[in-house]
Amino acid sequence: METLIINLLLTMMALAVVILARSRNLFAVIVLGGVYSFLMATVLVALDAVDVAMTEAAVGAGISTVLLLGALHLCKTEEAKPIHRPWLPLAVACGTAAVLAYGTLDLPAFSDPQAPIHVHVASRYLAEAMAQTGVPNVVTAVLASYRGYDTLGETVVVFTAGAGVIALLRRRKNNNDRRATQTDFSGERRP
Amino acid sequence: MTLASHFSYWITLFLMVAGLFIVIARGNLIKKLVGLGIFQTSVYLLYIAPGKLIGGTAPILAEGFKVYSNPLPHVLILTAIVVGVATLALGLALVVRIREAYGSIEEDEILQRDHSYQAEDAA
Amino acid sequence: MRHDLVLRIVAKLLIPFILLFALYVQFHGDFGPGGGFQAGVIAAAAVIFYALIYGLDTARRVVPDRLVETMLAAGVLLYAGVGFAGLALGGNFLDYFVLAADPVAGQHRGIFWVEVGVAVTVSGVMLKIFYMFAARGRGADGED
Image (cartoon, rainbow over all chains, first blue to last red; front, side, top):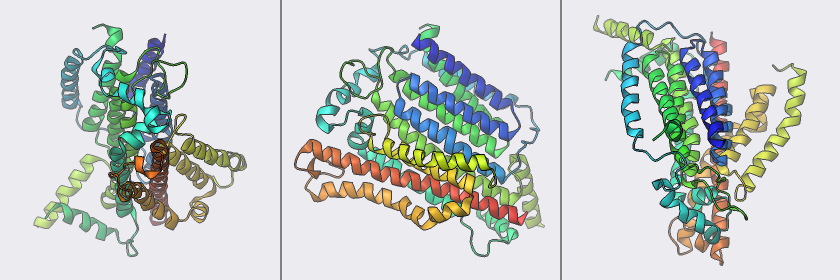
């Protein structure tokens, strides 16, 4: 039953992506992206990843959609008709898919308790987290304590991305001259 | 190996390849970023689906539960999502700047304009 | 959107609860689903919601740019500070066992402050990014 629900949701996600890829109205694309994120969050709940599901619902469906719409507000909403038929990208994608599908044949079956992922370090976290940290939510314990270095790195990455956005979008005082920005950009690419 | 035991892998794979296809086939920069986002979310599935145990529960320790899903991929992906949105914002900021400099977010038009600038410089 | 009565009232009703939920997610993250990343995003979403309904300028008066930019750096510094506190008390970098007399209490304390640091940085970054895009949009409107 559980597997059936998960598979059904996964199929719906695949459908959403197919519609998204075919649509040329960017507003529709972004809203479909939000739908896709909510489906993803639901799948993650079904996969017992409640912390991740909460983040995905808030970030993927909330903040990303707002940001994309904000950026779209500054650009055109209709995608131009492609000049080439997408045969070459399709061939590349299919080739990649074939190679990856060949790779999945050796992977352990879904929900196999003997799979390497379950017999390695995770069982130790589950057994010892409560005694060592006193935190019942193992995800929090691993995130903040066992893998604190990782999380510090991720926080710094988030900070850096924020700083990058500030650097790119901050208005300088004499920024009304568009021509200046143009030469700026082309100058950087042609040393 | 049966359909049921590997279905989640194949959907993951499909999403990944669909994202890749959008990134390389579409010329619109915002559409490309959406495609990149789909590629990225497919990786979430790739990590988290194998950690699931049918009949298990979320990794929050409590009396009366013995089987928990694997918490480690959850941790890795949790941070990946937030970093993902931060990098998406960075990409969008670049798109906005490109739009201001070139007046377009279509790859073909940007390239065309680039060539005409080069021709101007040469002349 | 500024004159839509229904949206304004609903926003006024919802925003306190969204902020409260963010605090719950932050401080209950040890025992249930949640933690710094989620709480930061939810708190930022509440302010973004406010800005969407009441306008960017009002939101900027409530949560000024200066505060947001400080949050950006303060969270990372707080996180790293917990690491250095571990060093100063004779442990390793990001070693929480030495933060209190009882090792488990020390872990609790370390995890708490680290999560606060994460939440502060994440909400600061999300909010700053939104402010940048929204302000840019208005400027472009003026130019076009």
